[in-house]
Amino acid sequence: MINGEIIVDNFAGGGGASTGIEIAIGKSVDIAINHDPAAIAMHKANHPDTEHYTEDVWHVDPVEACNGRPVALAWFSPDCKHHSKAKGGKPVSKKIRGLAWVAVKWAKKVKPRVIMLENVEEFMDWGRLDEKNRPDPRYKGETFRRFVRQLEKQGYEVQFRLLRACDYGAPTIRRRFFMIARCDGSEIVWPEGTHAEPDGLEVIFGIKKPWVPVSDVLDFSLPCPSIFATSEEIMEQYGLRAVRPLSEKTMKRIARGLMKFVINNPKPFIVSIEEEEDCKAANLIQYHSEQTEGVRGQEIDRPLMTVDSSNRYGLVETFITQFNNNCEGQSVDLPLNTMTAHTNHFGEVRAFLVKYYGNGDNAVSCAEPIPTITAKDRMGLVVVNGENYMIDDIGLRMLTPRELFDAQGFPHDYIIDRDADGKEYPRSEQVARCGNAVCPPIPTALVRANLPELCMGVAV
Image 1 (cartoon, one colour):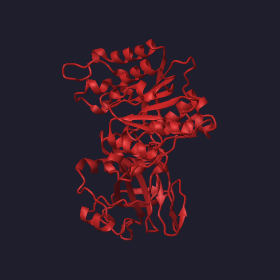
Image 2 (cartoon, rainbow, N blue to C red):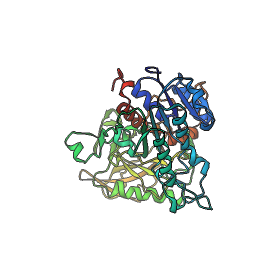
Image 3 (cartoon, rainbow, N blue to C red):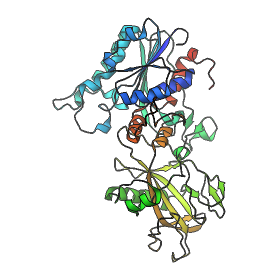
Image 4 (cartoon, rainbow, N blue to C red):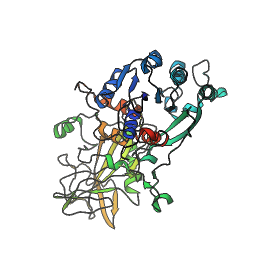
């Protein structure tokens, strides 16, 4: 509670809105509501001072929960799956699509000074369903407009915009719908983004910072097993479980990515691999005695990191492959593409390069202890600073939950692997919480801009 007022978060996923709000005001939200015990468990681990309700949002009485305390801010992140285009042509649930109406319930019963709501951009298309429970294009946006009018009838000014997390410092390109409604007579403020496209004029003239590349949050020290190795070999060499053989679609995605981000890329993202000192390489590097600590970025000129190996003659080129929507992947120089809640679709692909002198006989694998499989086949030649290198091996690993949370803009020390009682949190649950979560930098910016009186004394 600040100045006698409380903050309520009807949160989603891993609790990114609560985290962003806490960064802005310097304390945890007062009340957090979610129907999922697993989501509540992660929230409790990170926000132990918050009062938690493990209930359907419709079953929580706002008057009883607030207990006479005025509400400065009520945040809502209603389930987005049945609005999202990711649902495809599958039938949707009218009940789940209607969860946003709970914001009107809170507006009527406890009149929060400010209401903020986050969802997918298709939320603006909210309308009636046809006889097959699919969105009826004839009524596109009809229910959304009615929702806005209901808030206005309660005395709220309502504005909404689409915001990208990468514009506020998160290494993901994720774009979402945000609504701000307030009834206290103060102006609604949309904070200017702090970051922009690296080649844009705002960055060139120093007005904004460049987008944070995904390379900044990737751990290149993690093993990246050869795509040609069997599951047994990977288990023996790395102690990792793996699904082998890779599907034909996956192999085609990797091949397309190699052509785009390695072989035909005029400015490939390359990491040097050496034995001794760390070499902070942010550009193409050829090395003979240093070891890379970590480069951050994706070919997208956005975030990713660097890899470690024992072959001092090797170079490693890396990019992100995406296992959905027929994607060929992305460079690590850019922010990560938008992730989903159900499955980890992102993997890091590494092309291990060796000096090429014409016949491949002197190639040394960078993928030890996995044997060199393709040295003489010369899968592809890459020119690095005028010198020829050959693709000697290709590695693939899935991004870890920690990397995904970091890419969403969560603090690196955010607890994702155990609940408040120390019980281990499965990786699949970690990924699910991440994909559903709000990227914290945006709520931080929105709260600082619209509720500065709650943020006084908090370092920016």
